[in-house]
Length: 370
Image 1 (tube, rainbow, N blue to C red):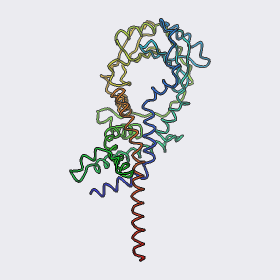
Image 2: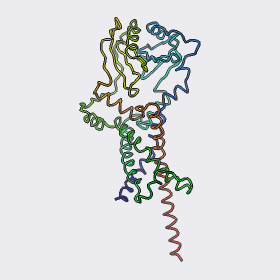
Image 3: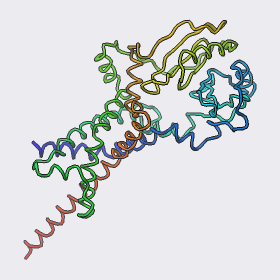
Image 4: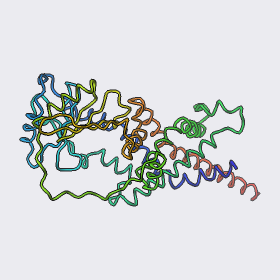
């Protein structure tokens, strides 16, 4: 039985290994997307000390921002309680186009065009191998992820030592017995330590690969199957001009209701609040308010929601390690690097095995010649 499992592990790993490495490596990069952006573009995300004072009222800030936009207009404002940070402004035209605004002067400090960014390329490689149609590549990544789940499970079965006296060595990497032993131990031991996180990342990643898988998970939680719509085209009807006159009143009320909030995003007649004690970064509460008075009309609490969108936010949080805060993402990052290395160390072990078999065969042939 063990030999059969070993063959399954080997022959599934050989064709899928390279794609596993690509998906895991790009996934590791994407875990710290926000931190890397803030490190590389500090002028976008932070304001100069000399400009810190009292933030402009939101309706004034909206006017100043719109004056600086030629063929676009402001759609939302994301506010954090940190006085050193800029506001992130969502724009009406373009997919995930943002501007970063000094809240004390209204000056735009920079733009972020997601579709033109390095991280979009990493995401496209991670999710559909940069396939322009997003069909074949998406299915390929999905099938590879299923194979990876099988590889993880069979790998753990093979990790369990036959000899009980060898349990201790299965938890350590031997660095004193040559390169071959080192790479073998690294493959087996590192894979064991990263097993659970890689399994979580794989099972949650499948939520974006196959509708049948996603709907099966929804059904486990008693949620009706989600209707997936095609790509939405741009509406030809003119956009209604936003009324930002009472955004400040809505913001002040929400800030009082949510002391220590992580962010508040205000848009026309609606707001999103990420509370201080939110379980992850997508666990936001949603509010609506009267555009003519700024008075809060309704609230949809994340913890009380039971819908497909909540399942997807949890799937994302588990996928990127966001459920454990900073250290959860660090562990997910390290596990992803291990996942990227497993096919490479596995290929090396396969090569060494084949080379030894070839040398043994050649030695036997020489003996027979004599």
